[in-house]
Length: 328
Image 1: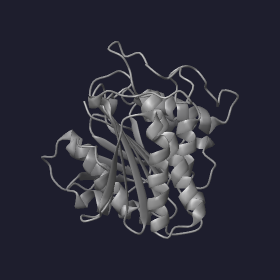
Image 2 (image 1 turned 45 degrees about the horizontal axis):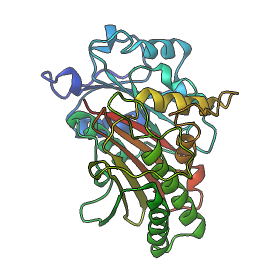
Image 3 (image 1 turned 120 degrees about the vertical axis):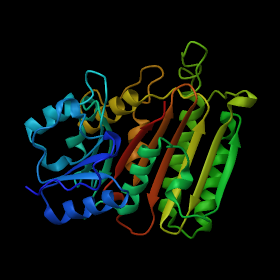
């Protein structure tokens, strides 16, 4: 097992990261990235024994594919009893293609926040953005995933009747980039799902009860002036991005994980039609993307970001990532 290597002896627990991977070359790759952010990095080839409550490390970056039953049990205990909770980030090759059964118990990992898909190595840009969002407690903004200077198109949506306009604008934008018609249609479908969720599932009343979740989606709803939905999309030639932002902040981390875990398991409970639930929609969106990112601030804002890799024909079968960030 490689010895612990420390950048500084004065790092706070939030800046101490445990990196675990049995692949020596990939372990060095990940450690190089974390050290570039001046994180106090403990690199191991196996999880081993954790400090009580995981308090010794603020971040755990762990190979999900190599978890033993003992490892899984230990990681599920992190954050279970409150107090200081480390952030658990998984990376995995198992998120390639459309086979996700291995992630059917994600909701049981109380400290889980991020799953980084890995085809070969974890993407350095994705990991750096992820770590910086965590360390700075600043998760919001589609622009974080694109180089400075990339232009964004933003629409303000006031009524669910604007959904058709939003889909048309998104498809026109994607077509203008010269994308394959299949990708254009897929992008439009993602916009449709995210905008629909923002209008019908996000709005809540003063008591937190959904206002329109029980509505037939053919019934139009109009939001107040200070409740408008913001839709943004942009592209840098490699990645096509979209975000929807609402001012309700009603979507919850446990709701997202419960919905996706249920779909990953592909059991008889895969489809959930209960009032106010996200149902199969989140899973459909996740499947269409390279990265699915949800930024949450309870009662203030929810931002859902989707990134599509448009560089290759086999993007749909490549590794996918899931990120959930919460700002208090």
